[in-house]
Structure formats: C-alpha cells, structure tokens
Length: 139
Image 1 (cartoon, rainbow, N blue to C red):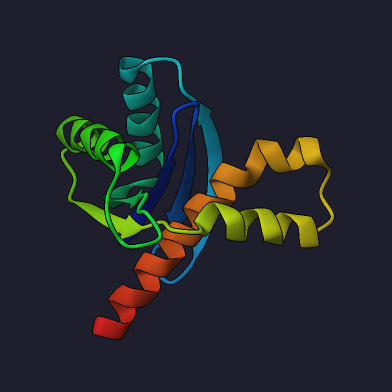
Image 2 (tube, rainbow, N blue to C red; image 1 turned 120 degrees about the horizontal axis):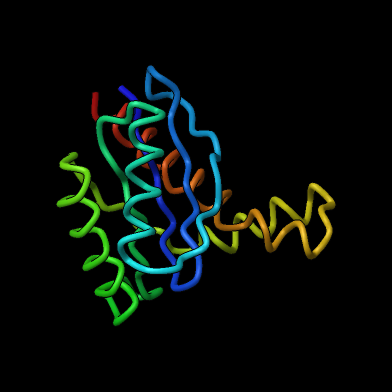
C-alpha cells in the first residue's frame, strides 16, 4: 500500500512516496506552487503514477503544540487534496522536520543552492517516514 507524504508550504510542496509495503519513504519531487488547480493536477498525476492509496500531510504546529494560521491554511489545502484525489488523508505533526532536513543536507555537504532545491522534498520524506513508523508500531 503506497502512501504519499507532503510538506506543504506557501511556495512549494515537497513530495515523498512510500515503497509498496509501506516501510520506507523516498523523495519524489518539489512542486513549485503556481495555483490551486495546477498544484492539485500535479499531485493527482503523481498519485496515479505511483498508485498511492492514501496521503499524509504535514501540519505545522507551534512548539507548545497549538495550531496557528499556517496550520489552518495547510488544512484547507489538505481538504482540497482529499476532494480532488478521493483518497484517505492523514495529518502528521511536522514540527522541526524542515530543521532536521536542513541538518541532514548540511551533513551531506550539499551546496546552499542545492539544499534550497531539495529541503522540502527531504522534509516530506521525514513526515512520511514518521507516519509509516507510527503505523507499524500500532500494528
């Protein structure tokens, strides 16, 4: 059962997809946001190409656990994804995933330019991997 993981930002959407067994997450691409219709069309293309059966969206939370305006914006977009793709949609806490992604890319000694190009994709991988691990632990 393939799952798509998304790190939704105002300018980009990082996309990751699990393997068929739902054990590991791999980065797919970073979508440059141009408009709701275009963004949803590209997500639909990827969902069909990878035959995903559900979607996980990272929801930004404040460090104290509360939700702010950014979380509400991502949730609105997530509902549009759910309507468009007709797939089950799950939310995953994304606190510090971008920070962790930046750290991993720094350790990999990528240039600043290259890090900017892939950080959202790596964050999507971390969001999806966290979801997959938690699901496996629940059984």
